[in-house]
Image (tube, rainbow, N blue to C red):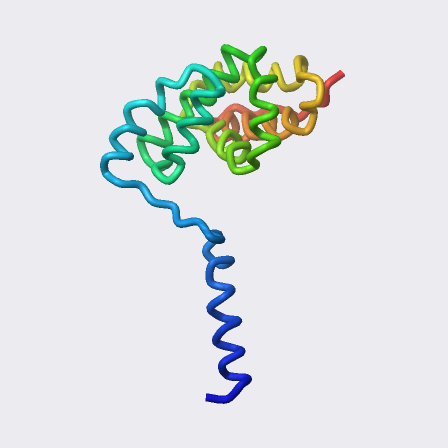
Length: 157
């Protein structure tokens, strides 16, 4: 095998993790983990509980488990908005967790809760959270739109 052929094969093998979106991390979910995640996903009541569950079971985030996480995320935002300040450092320290939260502001949740999230992001964004509020507002509006409710975007006044 020529030097250039070996080099091309090595380069190809090094880029496979980038294509799959997995760089140095294998995401898995055992049956036991799935059962535990399914039990707790919709019962999480604080940002710390949600974050710890994300760290333990993010590999199980699919189907009914994903819907449970969506329920917890949207409930925290809609009914405990004042606690969002506790989540800001978690988002800053773990962009994967931030993306997880945004992903779970989705149309499987209650429209009234999504409307509350939208309202809070427009009128009650915590200091230092402007960009996060914009992204959460867009996620809530997208979820509502998928459920047939359309808003015209507006900025915080």
